[in-house]
Image (tube, rainbow, N blue to C red; front, side):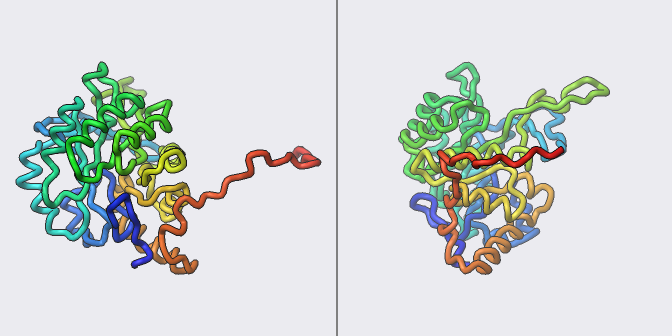
Length: 316
């Protein structure tokens, strides 16, 4: 499967298929060989143990799911002594996802996880920023640039920055992350939403609002992937609603160099394995030598295309 090799900055991955943070556990090792994946992206954790949000934390939607897990975490010590030794056994790049509520806390945690066995850090900056009245870092370019700059000074590891779809300035945010020293962008996290039980008239999540994932957010994540790929020089990892081979191909053609699979793994634990085999077969059937040949090859319409001379009649 050498045709599947892809590069994310200085890192070379055996293939572009990896899990999305929060959807990948050690238990999947009982289902398939985790060594076949392009990278292992672990669940986001914080320096200190935390319980997470009140229940219920998850609810089904017609085109995916919504969660308000709240990043429950066993903390840094548990990661270093229990989690890391398990993943070190694989010859697959390990990507550690971290979260914090201030620039300095992010920097301290990044420095603490910059240890042998960790290949890259994924900074989940969609979390509340206590230095900006609780607004998420990734919704504004200035706060994004500030936290990424702190992270960059704290570690020499490749720094992936996971951005949020809950912003009105996605290009500016992506460019701010690039200017501050990010090595790659993950596009994107969950989309903020809400659901109500009409019988009880209560929110279906204990936290009232939560993050939408699954097929419903794919067009948003795909659009953001394209925007980031065309407005920065950074490699982009597409994430959001990927469950089929066609989804993978759309993200690659839009400009992604790799993809992350999340909600689909809950529905079928072998989804990533199926996508990996399907991608290899698709490229081979078309005589395409490498994944890189299709990345960013979207064909756009001409900007000033003339209108047809005669418009077709309206259907009666």
